[in-house]
Image (cartoon, rainbow, N blue to C red; front, side, top):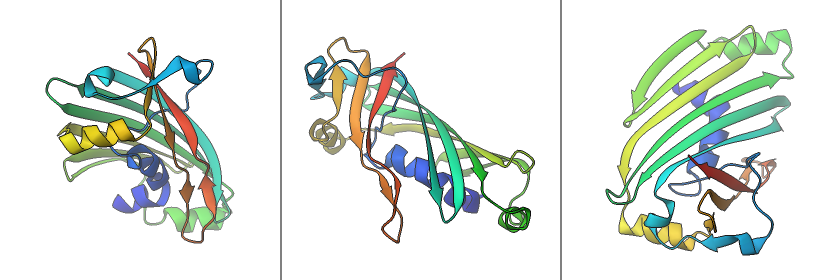
Length: 192
């Protein structure tokens, strides 16, 4: 199962956790007009609550085409100084010959499997007919330290003036050969 996450899911988790505790979503919800619609996040109280978004992207890596969609929900309790993360990621792949697909999936077990590792519960559903792998991860509440708050404040994260959207730039992903797999982008989360 760990192999599955590294083979097809690691890119989304890199985006998810790569900017620290919070990464946001590219949205569909729009980001407002211009820079004057946003203010810098300077305290945990500004981002208290539940934030949700969906990010979709496609990329090609080593000749295989990937389409990923990730739903992410963050529950931030400013008074308790905790964050809970839930994420669901679906990856579809194409570009394999039938022999390549058979070889690729030979180490995978079709159906649904659940494991818990380092306090995170992963559920992976592999549909070899549709060539999709759906991964959900639930991360229990994590304590937010003063250092985390300082990093959030200095990360460039912004909140809309109406308090309904979060925005942060997320760096892209470059593979070991230096090829850009996913371009950097501004990510938007909507308050629930």
